[in-house]
Length: 81
Image 1: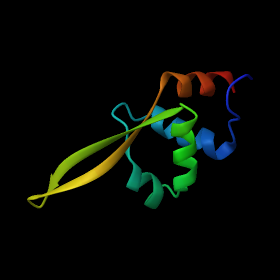
Image 2: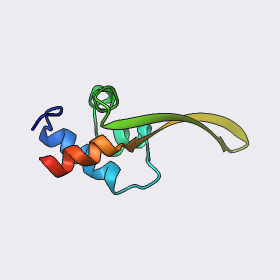
Image 3: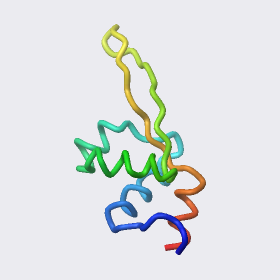
Image 4: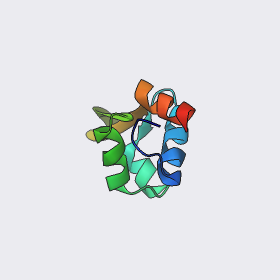
């Protein structure tokens, strides 16, 4: 394999992201799925995932969230491992 090393935890994160076509709220990944923020940051820095800031309105107030989605490189890493 020539790309970044895919640990079991990275694989679990990438598989979850691959199953979510619109990406996943980073807060949900941390608090519900128990991923470490450093792991998510590492996926983004390695180009396996992308992070996008988004503003949504909740109870009439704007709230900024981070949405994480898998990239083509992330899909390729899953296929190669």
